[in-house]
Length: 314
Image 1 (cartoon, helix red, strand yellow):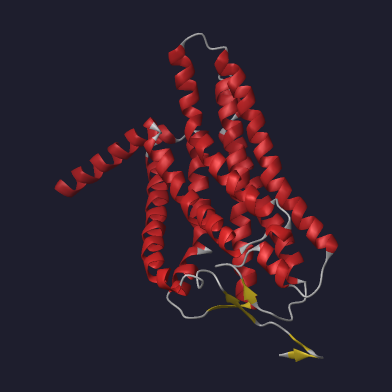
Image 2: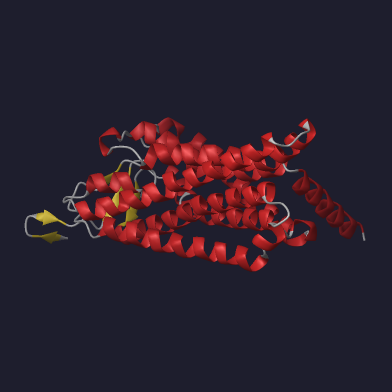
């Protein structure tokens, strides 16, 4: 389509891993295994938490929500990426690109806020144990999740809107394997400084503010742990936070590199590698860390497996 002397972009070409043509099939195999592992791990965690009454507490309620969000988050990117790895030229329509970005940003924002909520949950559990059942009651926890989901959709709507009201008149090659903010801003023919400021503020709010709130929670937790007289008590208190802390460091470390740096520092190969980390490795890390490091989840998994085996024998 043409308008005046400029062509209007109706589809984008995803460069992605085309710089490594010999590696595309091996990458397809590796990424497929990782994606199936992500799905299996998250489904097992969600099912286990739902079935085991011992896990019906806020900590695991938020973990189940995080696993659900991670499943939707990866579904918006990875299946399309796997298909594109088998193509000579990977393309995505203008509308498809907008939908992918919208879904991806929605659940990326939800993940950030859920990790913040989980940090607050650990703070109340360790610093205010006597008030924990009252402060973190089911109604309040449900409201927190509803709030995070609503804000996730609201912020992603604003981000996607300010990206796709920009004129795209060519070139149409996205130096990425999915529709992300930075590469699309680079392709735009015009600038919308107000929109770019809004997008940056939302990214700053999601990444920096969420991380600072989590850091504040852990500083208060650390202060409480240091006051525990016994080494065993300190170890038990810290062990309840270790899984969450590992996931937070990886998640916010990658997100800050991608979304909180000048556009001039955008490079294809570096960003592709970092993006693989937060679209594949981090979602894979979550179920692994929470299942391997959490004794309650391990016990619940063994119970579930035991029941399944008994049913099969009958």
